[in-house]
Amino acid sequence: DSLCPAPGAPEGAIARARDTAKSNPDFVHLDQYLNEANPGAHYRTTGPEIWKQTGGKVTHLVAGLGTCGTITGTGRFLKERQSDIQVLGVCPEEGHDIPGVRSQRQLQQTQLYRPDAYDAEVEIGNRAAYDLCWRLNREECIIAGPSSGMALAGAIKLVPDEAGLLAVVIFPDNIFKYA
Image (cartoon, rainbow, N blue to C red; front, top):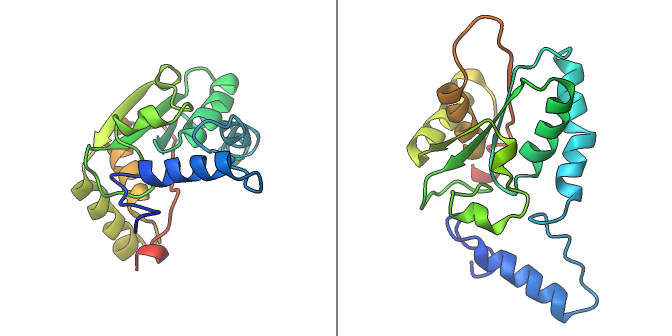
């Protein structure tokens, strides 16, 4: 609808939220695209959780690029523990239809996008993201959504198939809202 447009054009909803907060003192816009509390929360929670659950053996972090709070905060925490951990970003192709993530052009909307802090990035098409989403649901019984399929497709492209590697792929959505 007009307030929450298609994933390929989320600028309308962001602008509407910012304008509403500016013009109405009863509204507060936390703005996940520039609020340092976003990556800060992942630095304090997601990073330590991954470190603990992998026993510090994680070698790769793979995350989709949306607000970039997850990859920026989690990646910073993990690199402070082990500097050679690979922090890998995955974004959709331009004109995509994958909710919650940003193409290279759209990443200019977020001040939390910090490509110098990532070791590599890859672009994934709609078809690959949705195909892996369906495979995860049908074959693995993992109720992941399309941005999770995109992240996994990126991991398959970026993480070498070698013994001793432990890649953590962030699955930020589930399939329920798409069913």
